[in-house]
Image (cartoon, rainbow, N blue to C red; front, side, top):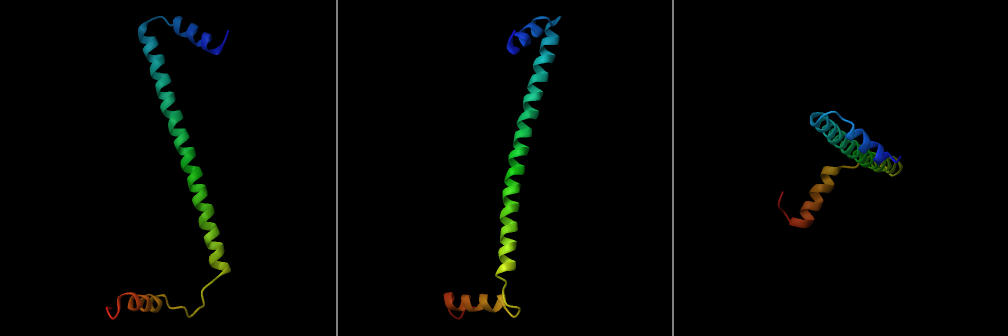
Length: 88
């Protein structure tokens, strides 16, 4: 007897329609939970990939660090002047 045949036999052996409805409801709930489990697994994989990229970027930052006297604000001002002229 295959699993499907066994499942059909079990459904046929249920005493009344309420039992069948309960069984169907349980299967639906199981399918919803299984679907959410897959979503959680996909989200964890995505987070794992993002974490790996972040750690790679952190490694690059340590490998190619900026000089101690690097002034981000001054670089931004110069770029703004170059692009837009004298607007500050």
